[in-house]
Image (cartoon, rainbow, N blue to C red; front, side, top):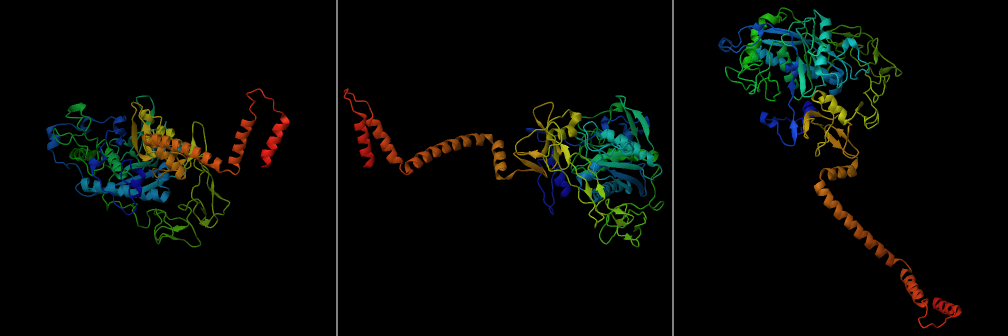
Length: 569
């Protein structure tokens, strides 16, 4: 439920903890009304892949479709050991390292179940490398893939840098490595190199625009609602699968056929995991993808093992050695014995009170650091440094400057520790689609809606604007909702979003206020003490002091006496 709420679209139903969300695939189809829904896609087709021999490509011939579906796949269970990494943006999304690790293990458990049921191959995680929550202010060239989302750094750039990094860990026993991030490029949420299973090195190639690109046994996936399906999809590319055909792609033959047909002349295969466009109902590989992977298996799967041949500890939940400190454990270093922690029992060694490797920044030589030690430096203009408490090995929660604090030009303000704006977030997400501005429509102020560069419509991306992003009148985004500054802000936001009601209502209110003001003025004046008496005097003075119409002279003395006499009476 938590993950669903984090990545649900504006038209998805809300869910509360403890509830299950059940939906049909047809419920998630595009609805072409005012907004254009953009389905998640794999960017595989836009990449330049290493040249393959003609025998490795899927051809549309009778022998291919008539052969045994599983011909070439192992008849006994095999295991493909894998490594996984998470950059700082992924850890930020799941709030901390522990949550990110649990999500990764869950993703691979789900993907492994499909591979084992289909190909008799399980996926075993032997390495999980997770970066710190704070993204570095200066990119480390050795781990260039660990950086904040950047409009000039696309998903394929991140994959290239990750492939180069992965190649430096040769002979680690991993057939593939996979990177988790929260930086999709437009609607692209995943990428992987084709048929690079068991390639632990890296090959340098030049792109069509003359840029360097590194190829290795690696893939990358971004946060989505059905995250494990993107992971399984990209691993499928590593095993040799290409995208399934859609109705617009086929029938096709020979070199013109760059997709995998369902069977014979059947083309619509968007209901399977290898569809280029994400599909919420996809939970298995198409018959064509199964044949493709099985056909490639003997030539590419040179690093897979029998489970009994080479036993290696793999990451699972609720077990000592998975790197997650769980109930009844004092420490868990992922199976590595350290001066502080006994890897076999997950208990502290003598005199140790914390673990240097896993405790977050406030443990040194198995002892808690003093409160003067800075455990987390400020990473952005909106971040602040944190110091140890002196009584805990855990660095305090990351704190930021107040949301809305001005941190740069062009409307940049702090939001959840990031210096950003609505336009900046749309630019970062959709720069490859020439998207540069956000758009606001109805009450969806905090859904990730961006202006389409080709029309006056809005494009709906999954997810929301960052918590703390300004919205409405003095409000801030939180979990996809605009929380306004009190009743006044909510009222103003409602009136702004319903102008057809607001304009006549405001006119009527204005007329009522004017009438009430006039009545109050008149009523108040007539009720003032002495007002009527003073009014009679002014009327009398006005009539007595008029010049005589007959030309008769009246002395000032007589007038004065008369006035005094009237005043006295």
